[in-house]
Image 1 (cartoon, rainbow, N blue to C red):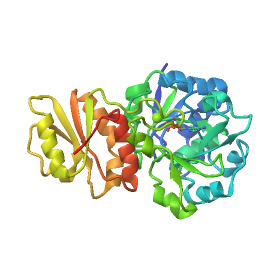
Image 2 (image 1 turned 120 degrees about the vertical axis):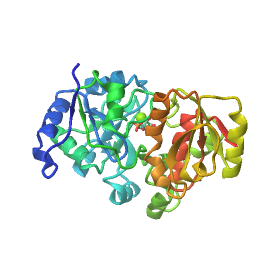
Image 3 (image 1 turned 180 degrees about the horizontal axis):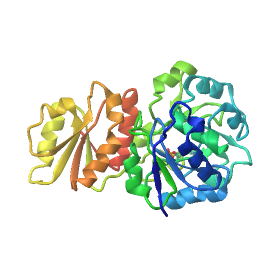
Length: 347
Ligand code: AMP
Ligand code: MG
C-alpha cells in the first residue's frame, strides 16, 4: 500500500482543507488514517464499522481483546453511542473536554464489539487538537484511534514515528509536528456509581479531585505489587525498548552511585535522566536528557521519543531515573514502569 504523508494547508478553515477532506473520505470508506492529537498520534478508523476497526488491530498487531478509544468531535455524537451519562461524568466533560481525558460508559448496540474488545462498555474521548476534531467531523462518524505505533513500541509523538512503524500498511498520515503532552490520555471509568481512574495522564488526580472530590484509582497498588494495572488491555507489555531497562527510584546521589556500581564493566549503556542529575554524573554512559525534574511536564513530552532513540542507537542497557510520583509525575512513572517491565530498584 502507498501511504500518503500530508500536512494540513488551510489551518484557518480546516473544514475546507483538501487534506482533511481527503482523510475524511478515506475514513468514510473504511480506511486507516494516522492523525495528530494533543496526547500522541492516533491510528484512526470508523469506530462503528467492524471491518474498519479490525484493520486497526491488523495494522498494529494489537491483541483483539485490547479495546479501542472512540474519538468524537461534539457531545451530540456521544449521546448516540452510550447509555447512562451520570452527573459526575457531565462534570468531568465540562471541565476537561475537549482534552486529554477518556471516559468509559455503557455502550449502545451501534458500537460493535470489535471496537470495545468484546466489552459492554466503550471508551470515549473528545480531543482538543483542532485537526483531530475537524477530521472526525469530516468523516461524520466516531473514530476509533489507539496510538499509531506497532503494538509494544513506544507511542508516537511525531509523524516520523508513525512512519517508522506503519509506512506501507495504512492509507495516510497527517503530519502536524510534535504532539503537546506526549503521554496518552487519562482514563476514567464512569460506567458505575463511583468513578475510578484506570490510567494516569495529563489530567492529574488532583485536577479530577477538584471537580469530583475524592476519587480512587485502580493502577497504583497493583503496580507496587509488580503486576501492573488490571484494566482490560493494560495487561499487555507496553513501550518496551529493546535495551534492558532499569528504573532507579530515590535520592539522586544514591541513583548516581548505584548506576556506577551496576554499570561497572559495561561498555554500551545509557542513562535516561533529568538535567539536574546529568550535572552530577561523570561516568561513561551515553546520556539522554528527559527534561527537568523541577518541570515534570517537560519529561512527559520526551520519554517516548527517547525510548525510540535509545533503540535506534543500539543501546543494550539503560538506567532511567525515577521522578517524584506527584501530579503529572504519576503518569510519567506509570509509563516508565511499563517500559522497564517493572524492573525497579529503590535506592
Ligand atoms: P490506547 O492504548 O491509548 O489506545 O487506549 C486504549 C486503552 O483504553 C485500552 O488498552 C484499555 O486499557 C482502555 N480501555 C478502552 N476501552 C475500555 C473499556 N471499555 N473499559 C476499560 N478500559 C478501556
Ligand atoms: Mg497505545
